[in-house]
Amino acid sequence: QSALTQPPSASGSPGQSVTISCTGTSSDVGRYNYVSWYQQHAGKAPKLIIYEVTKRPSGVPDRFSGSKSGNTASLTVSGLQAEDEADYYCSSYAGSNNVVFGGGTKLTVL
Amino acid sequence: QLQLQESGPGLVKPSETLSLTCTVSGDSITRNGYYWGWIRQPPGKGLEWIGNILYSGVTYYNPSLKSRVTVSVDTSKNQFSLKLSSVTAADTAIYYCARVVATAFSWFDPWGQGTLVTASS
Image (cartoon, rainbow over all chains, first blue to last red; front, side, top):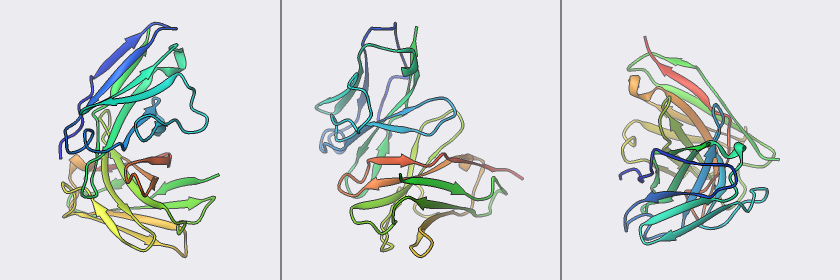
């Protein structure tokens, strides 16, 4: 199984929107609606912010939204805030009881 | 509130076995609907799934690590454990444990704080 493909970096100014892509294959992202997104601040453990492609856990601001088209999932952060600066990782169920993560995207708030 | 805490040696010699334990508090590890998982992150790199276990002992492993990994559970202590054999420098990483929603198999929440394990002589 190969890792999902994410851009290494993304950036935006406060108040702007930024979208991070996560590209897999028809065997993982394209087949299952089990894409999750995690936010990881420096030196901290990852935190779930999106599950099942579009759903937000309680307490996650609605500025974070998820979507999927074909083999590519996306995370959009609207109304960027300084506290959103972090690494973001996607993951997907890959069938046959396997899980695959993306390589991560470093989001910089300019 | 559910909390997970990893524990174990921070230094392992090459060719030896890495052993970690995850202690679950705030809920029973036998609650239906959940797996319990291990994920690792080499310094400065991305996340890698290691394996998931059900409280009954059913396990699923990353194919790339399967030959060296054993995950077990101790329901009496509300703990689950990871053993990784024949470690090399490439196994140096922060090791996290997490709860996993069974239906999705890949939805990890919450995570432990992580523990750094260095493979070095």
